[in-house]
Length: 355
Image (cartoon, rainbow, N blue to C red; front, side, top):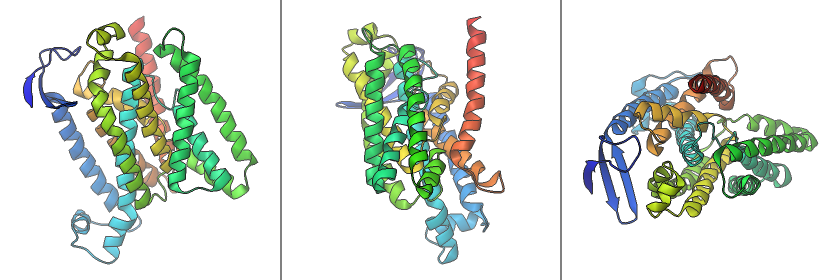
């Protein structure tokens, strides 16, 4: 372990960082990023308690804390631990995974519009899971497998179609948008050909919903996401060096092609795991990395702040989805509204900057 001033990463010169290094694994802790993450963690804790308190059976903060620490039994314990906590935990875990996935793609493609949903990977994961639902009415493990296969196949197709003496960010995004449109049409056709009950369930799930999420899905999904986050952390240093350009990264010994493919695989795996449990939750992976970068004031994309912002966004959107309308809404509807507004602002600001 050593403490020092960063010297090799663009935009971080003169900033105090703590580097925890253990053989092949290294974690950079920027001072401002640590403060930002601490503030976000406090906001997440407050939002989680509010979500656990609010519902048709209202509770006080003391009851919630007591139930979480084992001091409550009976109805209060069941409401907090068995009914509401799985949904809150799912929002936090899945939101963090989407934030990291978006950060990986935006750093890799050096484009703030590089989102798994925009470039078709989320649609591919949804197509794979949808086929499992409609054909075999599979278990959650089978949904995860179908979503992974669909997402990886889509990533491979987009990568191959976009390859012209290398893969450039804008070309991959344009190809991904086209593939996403084709897959969306395929998904619509599959739903129209399905039985009525299956079609209604699949259509509701397509909006992205945490309704009915169980501890089993949270535990399995959380375990898969944890496994996928480990290589993301291992690749973060190479990812930051690649933001300086492929030539500069190669001069530091980074194996560009291997790292690029590895980042795509990890990003797709994170997105597919979330999609298998809740359907495609749109725009969280687009918005979270950019908000995190602005809060931490870093030139490049950082994974940990993006995970915290993603968790807070998903939890806040799910709270609004449950309580803003007379009937609970899928969380994906709220994230589309918030993310669409952010996307419009981002496009407007980019257009003004280039004029």
